[in-house]
Structures are given as structure tokens and as C-alpha cells.
Image (cartoon, rainbow, N blue to C red; front, side, top):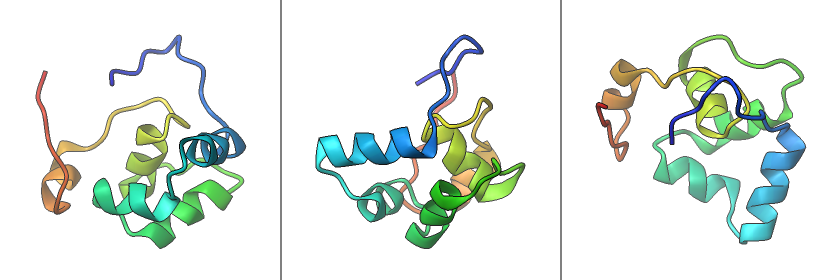
Length: 85
């Protein structure tokens, strides 16, 4: 999904509600995307958006932050697909 600056960002509560409505777990999403579940939970609990690293990538993938996911970090994460546009 390509995020544009016009896309409304989600709050942590909205992300949790989406997981609940879809019947998905945060842990399952984390493992599928190659992130430690504890780090995803930490991003969802944080009052501030992460600035860099895996936490930044998680916030971007969840739609909580504008930006791009680092292709360098994505290549290091097992089970993560890297696509180039």
C-alpha cells in the first residue's frame, strides 16, 4: 500500500479496533511482518510516534505514521517481502 500525505493517520486505538474487528491478533500480524510482537505492542502503547528503526517501520505499516519502510531493514527481517516500485 502506498501512503500519501493525504491519507488519514490512524491512532493506536483505531489500529487495535481494526485487529479486533478482523479477529486478528497483534502477535500474529507482527510475526507475519517479521517484527517482534513485544515491539509492536510497545509502538501501540507509546504516546509518541517512533522516529527510526524497526519501531518506525511498524508505525508506517500500521498506518500510524507517514513515511517509508526501510528496504535495508526489511531485507534483514525473515519473512518480509521487499518490493521495488
